[in-house]
Image: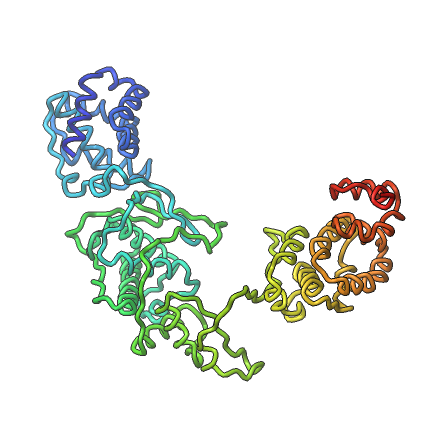
Length: 517
């Protein structure tokens, strides 16, 4: 802190005209402090508030706490700056300009008690918007690493709270004389966890200057302490020290009602599924039957299901304690008579299994004809055989139906009449060429028997829908070199213009040239 004020005073001494020239001052500050961008902006904001004029006034003989608080209040209200950082900036101006340049006495004690985040985080700190469901936290200056002893515990708690869509069980069971809104409690939980993450709270003590109901803050800490203790037990660590409110820690301004200190800004239209994650170290869980109660609590806290069904706890315990992949099969209702014990045995899988493959259709990222054809052409046959009929899906998917159709054509050569009718009926005329290209990607990999079946099935269906059967297969032949030669006689009978277009698209000579040769 003294080094910074001495360097700032040297700048003002060498360039006295910078005091009255704001643009020059800002440029010099960036040159003298190239990495301290946040501090430079704070000093510049104070210059905009004319702090240098107030310091230079004849009647201002003592730069004390009363003088400092006037500018701190304006910084907090007009720029949303944390009170600790505001005090730091005011003291820098008073020490460098008031004391070092003008020779006035500087006696600001408040800043010594709350040096601000700059003193904690150093020059590598930076501030950004921290997204949480329904809003964003502002005013927090982030640090590269959380130094808290239980950082990984709080990381798990933070990500759990952000993902949990239900009101915590502890809050639901809580008895209070006045009604509390969980939305406010949730935002306070998010703020406190971000304060821990960014080293505002190095241990267990927090001294918040909160402009809301203190009962909300106490409720937030109770929920946090409950979750932290639970995660500590699951990890196998000693109990995490409970967070507590005390006046001995550095004061931190927190607000849910105005832009002051560290606050939350509403984002009514924001996706409640979006949030800034807290990445911690991977945890090596060693769960035993003694952890069943805690996991049962998590299940009831985050879902509407309870208790665990047969085999589910054992599966969770093995998954969390293992570094290997697993495939789990459990009975759904009464549809299967399935031995749960055999589900828990190791499963060797050398190919891909797609469950609910109809979900491949994504309105935001359409599964194009080209992608469908490409997937059907390159996926292993074992994978293609594993596709379930589309009738098992709750909603029809043309994408999946077509992929299943191509899979059967390539892997077994078997075609279902009902599926063939659906594919053709749902293919519009404008998608005709795309369908041709899609089938062509698989056609060259099929057996002759499968091709004859395809001819037989499609002949009537295409014609019934007003689509040219001959054109369909002629174009397919033109996109496959061996088919071009094999079916040269058939291809030579099509329209001359279409022949030239098709040959050009495929990069081959026209069919007439091939047959003549």
